[in-house]
Image (cartoon, rainbow, N blue to C red; front, side, top):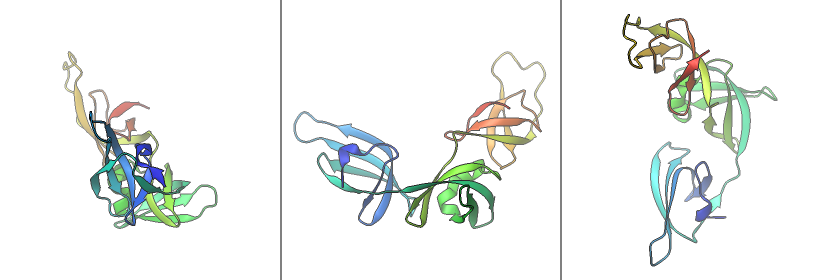
Length: 185
């Protein structure tokens, strides 16, 4: 059991048989009375996001998770397939777990998979990935007075706002935390 004051972003805990990962944390201490802790947490099995409030001093059940470095192999309509880089064991993970991170996955990308027992619950991407630009509108000549940007499409289907000099066939680095263009590679 851990105290709710120890809940920070990224901490996983169990409550009422459900596993939650803390997304946001705030501590509020009024002038009188006990402090309250408000968190925004994602249910790791259902994928829903909830806001919870605890009174300081309450306790929740902590969870021990295992992390495995895995390499993305391929995906189909329902599942994504990964291989453990140490023992070559293969994992099948549903689309609901991968969800919005699918736009950053390309073959041979190494990710960190989070397991509770034998159940895959979450995935961590590297902070940036290199993607090939497959579609880009041509830059307009003479439009360089300000920081002109345009939308480009990458090999995974991700749409990224880039500077106007990025062309089709260019490899760009994209930040996986917010989907922003970082640099040309």
